[in-house]
Length: 249
Image 1 (cartoon, rainbow, N blue to C red):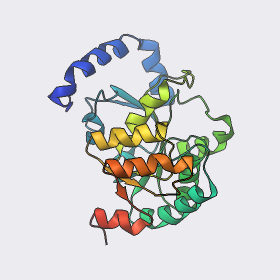
Image 2 (image 1 turned 120 degrees about the vertical axis):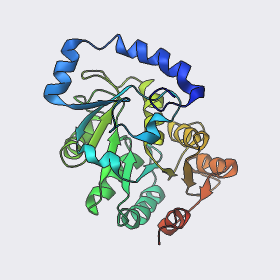
Image 3 (image 1 turned 90 degrees about the vertical axis):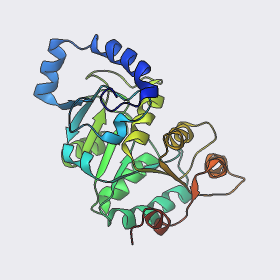
Image 4 (image 1 turned 180 degrees about the horizontal axis):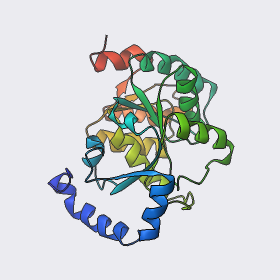
């Protein structure tokens, strides 16, 4: 294996590695060392689960507590246009999960991601935010205070160089990191074929546990969860469902 990358993924990883390596200059490394932490796929601190996914990032740029990468993790993701029901489900699920020392991973996007980070922080848990731009860029801008707080007290991760803007195609790429970092993914709400749905589908393909909260069949934000359940995700509506699946009493 190359840096723990699965044999089936080695060709695409090697191509990506050399493409990315060619864009990083000595000045870039100087900037990283001065302002941020970074690890490569060859480092012992690189998360083993992430190294096993399709086309893992060659490097992660980090701001905050890198030790959080050693924790057990659950991704909590959902719709950007979160409903009251979605927010209530996050408030119901997260407090019990974090009492078991499980770190919550999400994407710092509007809606469910933001709610997941805030609920975790509010209840004294630990959270990791994976963003689709450079660590010095705030997106969405209204989450500036939240991003700053997570970078100081928790952990922010990106595979993008500083100053890189949040381009639309970065987010499907970002989603594979969220799925790859996590033992399991809990989907609160999702429209069919949305970014949240794609993240969960990637997790299923990688053999991760996927938990989906059912909702009304008449709501678009429930369609993705219901389809994921049909595809093999575990239907859950309380935190104990996740803990039982992981044999945590």
